[in-house]
Length: 266
Image 1: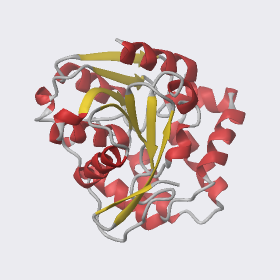
Image 2: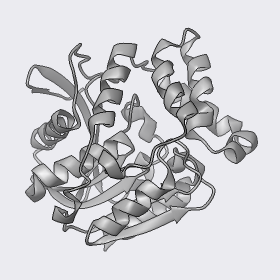
Image 3: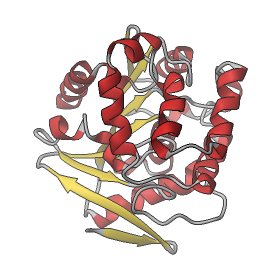
């Protein structure tokens, strides 16, 4: 199992497939197994690198503040360990924040961006409802089993229509997620990093091809955040998934995989 040591942190990563390098960066509290619907399709076309952010999965779980900048440096260290000079980068939610910061701090390392269900943060960020914000903070204090806690969060990250129609797919996601449970202190450290994220005044510096993907029923990171990103990044394309919630890569798996492959193939 490959690890890279970076600033006294051990980061777990894997490499799948062959072709142009593609780095996948997962979101808040989620580990690399959460790419289980995306990785097999992309690895048929690219050399896909997945890793666990600090605080989740098999990576170190330090009890100190995190930041998006620190986690972007972690991502750069993973590219170094994989001997990749530059890669396409696909980030989901918090991973999209990390991807933005990686492209801004190390533009020579990023060939293109795919930004999923994410935001530039700062004063331009469109907030979720107060109820959802409270639930996100309260998740760290839930006292049920990992499976119960994951189901309690389902209404935040999946659309109501999808929950009613495809509970078995959500169960599959949850079974992957609870294989490695994120400790509360790590979840809160990642959440605080997300809340401090702000690239809103720097997006015009991103000049590489960018695909923004967002479900228009996303209640956690409302759709307007994706619209704002696409408007402010010079070479950005907005791909809207009608009716999809935050976890659009489960709600519209084939559509998303095909769109990402098509975009990166250009």
